[in-house]
Length: 467
Image 1 (cartoon, rainbow, N blue to C red):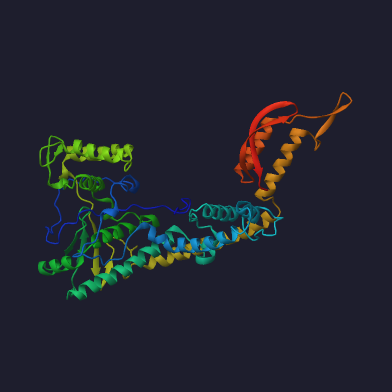
Image 2 (cartoon, rainbow, N blue to C red):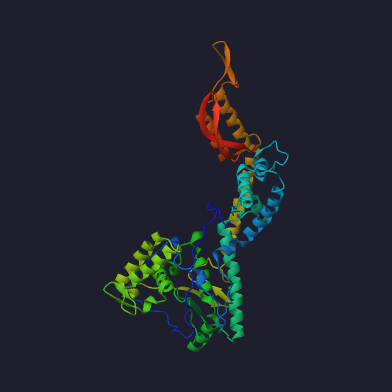
């Protein structure tokens, strides 16, 4: 399953490992006031942890909506797979499915030629059908006719916005059900704030009395709830919509989160509880923690389960934190308010709670304008392409031009010394022609042959003509 990166981009996931019990200290860790914030692109720490490490137990069951970045693409892939699977069955009815696909999209003389598509759309459809024919899944591209016909196109900004709102609505419902189930009533004047730490993903409650806070935490800290809430808040950052990052998204040391999960995943240790002196962390039995980590990571590399080059990225973050000390910088906690039975984003009007969604209508209006302009340009492009050569026709013309350069003005022979002799073709040019036709999918490699042309032995790649 792949996504066309011209139109889409994946975002990071921060994954849960070894949740602490609900009886753990519910106070957020305090750090020095001197906060060295490290704004870091998501791709730098996205591969440090694995969601597969998170498992529900009999005692703890997740109630929040499942969170995975690929889930927002689900409906698009479903439509693509259904369409191209059906088309693939039709393609396989032909003796040469590959040639049929090429003819269908690029040969105007074919009775199966599909009309009404731009050149870009033809390339997208042909590639998708060829991928499915080879047992792969089609790529997701916003310009695919299947996406346009089923969803009027798609745009990453609109898609992310709608997906975040869907998750928020489901999360509100889950929280309200948890409160009702546990007999929890939030006072109308309460300023309930939920804070999720980036290590245990424990949901801390504040803004209400201590007894109620404990009940709220016990009700919400089940299964992967904290992990899902942390990820949801992180994805609700409005920065992609022309808004400055709210403070909570730029404060905190993200590398601490990376190092914590790296250490915990490899050794099971909580680095916050280990001795830190002379610029190093030490295991409970007195070993240099980094040496232990290297040994364990190198075993993963040897087994093919890790990339050796990534260890340097871990090391840079680890050594900085080891020298500075764990409490030198603040944690990248994420917070969200709860009022009127709904979660509300903080420090922004570009949110997904009550009174925070007016901007969504502006984004949709913007995209509608983009779509209208695209359809107008598409119509003009279709008119232009009616009088231009298709990829198939271009290949045929290039072949004819190549043959003309090799054999003369369409002649295979010429008079020499009052005799008619066959001119030996330029084999270098012929090989270039064959390579080009193979690249364009017009021919496929058959075997290596030694051809006797004009009395001269030459070895070239021979091909089986497909068109």
